[in-house]
Image (cartoon, rainbow, N blue to C red; front, side, top):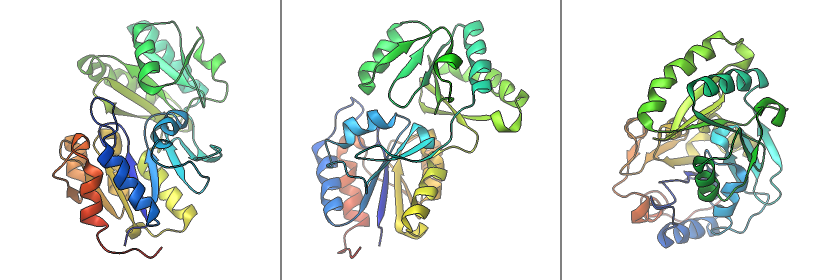
Length: 277
């Protein structure tokens, strides 16, 4: 019996064109009505998650979002912070210097907005895709005095893959408390979060808070940033067209993907029996 279903959003719940297949929406509504806790997990901000999740389930504070790849856990209705861990100011400064020298697009985040050092087509596209707004500042540290839940490099995958080594070198030079982790959430999105932050540790933390045993949790995803979540769940599931790392980490690989209404397959395969929660 699974009491908690954690789902990635982009290319898992949402189709590759960004739309929400009705089959995914309807399956999640049915599972929620049967008492299953649905946790939306994403590299997106919790505000961006809410714009999608609210079209599926009416937001309530007994529902939760895991945002920024695990840097923030918030309640759905009031977005009350349950737990958080941010990239430090010293790490932001070092990465901002690197981005400036390498001419890379880098953005940081407050709870609701993202911050860039100059307007750009990349910032405009990201704002439109995530339904958020951005602020412009030539000093990310000053604009984000509490740190940032994540930083995001945007660019061609080959370019970011080459620079990932240089970014790792920066990490090695920082004190332990300022270190970070890198991951690709999409081929053109290289994400930076504080060390030990990922969707998996956030899922474990939330399950502990809710007093739900690990073997009663199920997680589904498609990307590199879903690997830890898939491993952490009692049953980890990858969609059919998932990243190789997600597939290799999963207990089960599904026959369908986001575009095919994958939540219907999850409902049939893992929630076929009546639930008593």
